Image 1: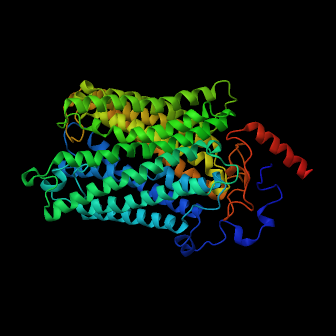
Image 2: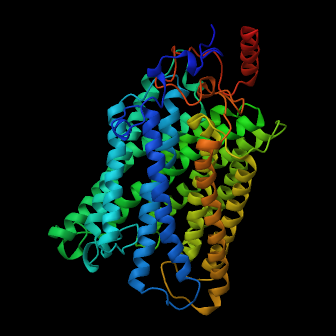
Image 3: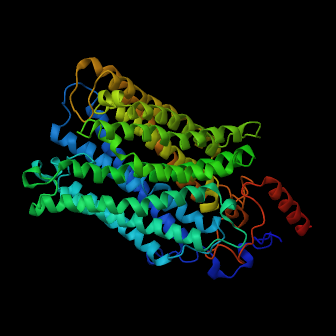
Amino acid sequence: MSTIVSLPDQTTAALPKRTYINNEHGILSWLLTADHKRIAMLYLVSITFFFFVGGFFAGMVRLELLTPAGDLMAADTYNKMFTMHGIVMIFLFLVPSVPATLGNFLIPIMIGAKDLAFPKINLLSWYLYMIGGIFVLTTLVLGGVDTGWTFTTPLSTHYLNTHVVTTATAIFIAGFSSIFTGLNFIVTIHRMRAPGMTWFRLPLFVWSNYAASVLMVLGTPVLAIAIVLVALERTIGIGVFDPTKGGDPLLFQHLFWFYSHPAVYIMILPGFGVISEVISTFSRKRVFGYTAVAFSSVAIAVFGFFVWAHHMFIMGVSNYSALVFSLLTMLVAVPSAIKIFNWSFTMQKGSITFETPMLYAFGFIGLFTIGGLTGVFLGALGMDVMLTETYFVVAHFHFVMVGGMLMAFLAGIHFWWPKLTGRMYPESVSKLAAIITFVGFILTFFPQFVVGYLGMPRRYHAYPPEFQVLNVLSTAGATVLGVGYMLPLLYLAWSLKYGAIAGNNPWQATGLEWQIQSPPLTENFLETPIVDHEAYDYEWLERKTERELQYVG
């Protein structure tokens, strides 16, 4: 049995026009497309826009914290700034970032399919995402919301006169975008794999997105219910969370965190998949313990639904519940540690090269490991009670989500950019951007561990003067970090016109996506591929290359 892929003479010049991914350039053709690759590019543009909107709010927060006195903005305005930062970054960037962009583009190609199972629903998911984003921008224009991104009751239901309902509507709509994307991925991976593409020949990127999709489909409706109940209580006073009417404010905490802690894994699991692909490619080795890494993604998804109450240790849960959830929190670290261990052994004695995606992968491992280890502190009952409302939590969360997820996202964008666009980017500038991003991140968030341990509470716009030095260092680091994020935007845009032609497989990787032309055809494959090799089989790739050279000869 042989693998049927695009042969060397299958160039764009020899193909009928209808097969080009960029055959139609009109705006309407993009807005009505059912091509998963175009929808992925629509997501990429949209998500990038909202990332910089959320980054603006973060910049305003850091400027306020340059000085101990709250002298840049009023307390209410500051509350709106960090609330809008959290809402935009979590619901409009971190949750959809890798699945909606790289997952949308790559999963059908990686499994040998011509598209996702439901192309029109895929397009609908992007429209729902955009409608949710428009509602968030409307909230901003109307004056913002100041409850924090967690919408804690009774702040969100009674005491504040901000636009909670509008924001809740935005999150509710955007949540359906995630549900549809997850459903599409699950059905596609189950039903549309190419002949020979067994479960244990799937790339680990597919495994990770599959696990994240299960979390999306099962967890997001719970958040939707909680948000609807907040809106109803705020508008008609139904009393679900109001103790004066027989309600329970802790119920909202349970509903919200039942989704929002698995949401951490919705955000990070696809990033794990990116790192597996990058490390294998630039180490020229099959991922060490492939099966363990694959099942660790599933284990993270399962454990994710059993640790939500570790966010509630100071909120009145019983001692027994706190003990159980503390132990479960420690256990969820095990499958994450398996991944770090296996990536390290993948690199051992590998033929490692230091291209830009690999630098971002190294940054991911370093930052995520720090974030994971500090999460153990917050899972321990005694430490959590002391640290939970301090900047220690802010630092931990950003090391995991921004240091982890964003580094993985940038690693994936740089890794698959030649496949997405057919162009290469300037390697020296991109390596510099990776280094600047890593250094800027450490300067920004590591001081927050210290200032949080010393007792500085989060979400305050004024603080004691003895914390100023660490806050100035953090704000300076945020400036460096901003430069690191702006550089890829500039040189990747430049590469669209001026970048060198990438070729089909510039990294000499093994996945099916690298065996077809760049950018791919609308139908992805001229013929359905037949898979007869394991994932990350570099010996197979060498044999295939030799056959193609003989064919050309």
